[in-house]
Length: 146
Image 1 (cartoon, rainbow, N blue to C red):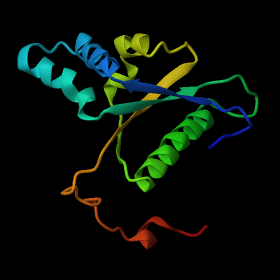
Image 2: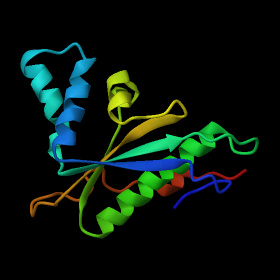
Image 3: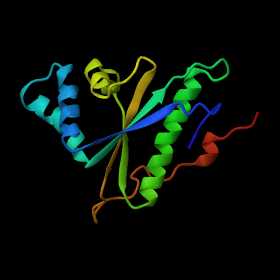
């Protein structure tokens, strides 16, 4: 798994079953939404049977800055997404403002030195699932020389 300075500045939290409902309630808690809008927001974590929360764990280091530790944790999420996709699972990375809400922090029991980067939503692929809709890109337009 991605690492820098042998800190292992990340952890993964499994969210399944009724924990997904508690996550949805945490989304709603600070949203200010009510009625049907709140119900739609609360249902978002139910879109997949398993969510993996990717957490950056900032560790004291004179050599490895916090942003580098965030990058290592994001690399873990990306590596897991690639491995899960290769194993035949449907996987989608979800982020957003909820990752920084107090209710979501409490639910995930994050320590002061931890930041939630997002969740991998993991489930089965349907027969009619589409390949990556973004299509191909011109790699040369993203590469330059110094």
